[in-house]
Image (cartoon, rainbow, N blue to C red):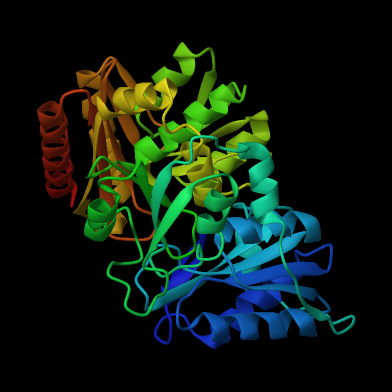
Length: 432
């Protein structure tokens, strides 16, 4: 089971059971000052059972439940602003046998100080029995106000992936003026896996080849992958397009995760914006956004564009509308060509977690001799030149060390990653 500020996740029936759901939701009750909580799930087979269990324990603890039934993560985050708290029953892009919970306070995910209060045992004193109400959402109308109407009627293919974006992403795109074809609307018979960033998306590539663009969502609808001219784009391109639209809307203050493409940062600065870098992870990006009143940003590795005025989470559905509104413009082609000239590779190597810190420290010593600039915000990042970098960081949940790199030359990028993985493995052999 994984227990982080990004959520609690596990294989349902093995390392995540209903007893765990009872314990964590019981503890979460103590953090809900409003005594109101929105709840919703994605389309995983175990979702309804977990949602009913979570609702029951919150109701017992005097929390009123507002049920969205099956809904994307961004919709649940959006509605939680109206009620004070929320629970998303999902394990995002993990395989179907997994499930989990994301906990929301005041429209944002929980932070490092709140996590222990959820995962460590505590008793809750019941004051009254809560009331359960099924609710609807104004999400599509609210998103449309930001995006506006599209006049050129772009042709778009949307691959739902059998997930919770059904009923939301296609409808939003139609509302703003797009012609929409839908693939994999239901989980039954879906031709791809839950994570569009790792799937080859062959059906979407084929179907969108003669259309303006293709969009693919994960099971809970917060991740978005773009397919353009028969090619699957990197997650950084998704973020870059969202950033470009927000610049067009007048936003200037951005936060990007430390592993986001340098192309996104360069584009922002060329347009007169400012950039701050956070640790990797949606929750870390949002935390820095809140501290510095940033207007937009996100995480390149997950294609996660974030617009705080609308939602404190990755916003795959809103982003699809923002990108659609740019289709057919010179700005869209400019941004896409700019982003596509950079190449990112993200890899990993198996290292016992007991040695992670020692390996990182060993590499830091070597990086300080090799690179003129190193950054130790999250792991160790070496700046090779103005267009190339390498980042080595430990996983908090697995026995792996992650290696990310970027360059405007693909062969150079591959060599950077290969050399970095060799360095990690050599350092591991030396110290263990």
